[in-house]
Image (tube, rainbow, N blue to C red; front, side):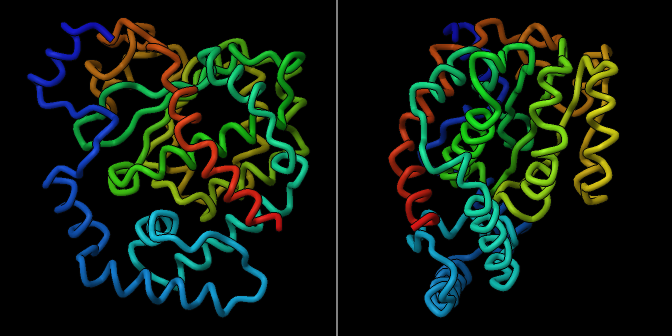
Length: 293
């Protein structure tokens, strides 16, 4: 990332994706939108831990850093947070083929090929912006199980940042050159898993998902997937085709890379996704071991 671009973004008031402390406006957003106060947070964490210890089937971490994700995602409704945590637990334990043997080398290879990316600055609402470019995944080299495991790990890593728990995430899914070979990896076997992940399972506040460059193969995949998605998540999905400038109605062009009509020129800066995954991989691995124990 060039110093000139960074200076411009800071001058315009855009915040970087890594925030070591919560800005005051995010603390206020948590109170206004999630109902979070120091007292509510402390009480809810205590209640959630107690409920987990009473549940003989649920095996999961009980540290504050892990549990707060679910409380914020469910706006401090302890019953709903426990329900989402159970869904997350069941999603992972019902697919041991994805998680029993974490292939770190393959996961690093995928994150370093510009398949997933994290944009360096947040949007006006403080949302993190992620991109996924399907054409950069070769299923002959990296199987779909690695893709799904890596996506789970990435979202786990990013949701450990309190700012992301509060503000949420926007995703740009670039379907350019989506092939039948890639389609067959997901459909039909993993359609239920993807649907469950998007439906009260992941502790992620999906603010919007933008699909670009979609053609026939993706439209077929969508015709299957949309049957099992909730109306809420479908209402947050936007299809732009080749009209890239439509994205600017939702995400400022200053934040976006040039291929999406933006002003960010140094894409995939220093394998940023691999670094994030490496930072929290041991925690992710320990969570998986706890779930599957």
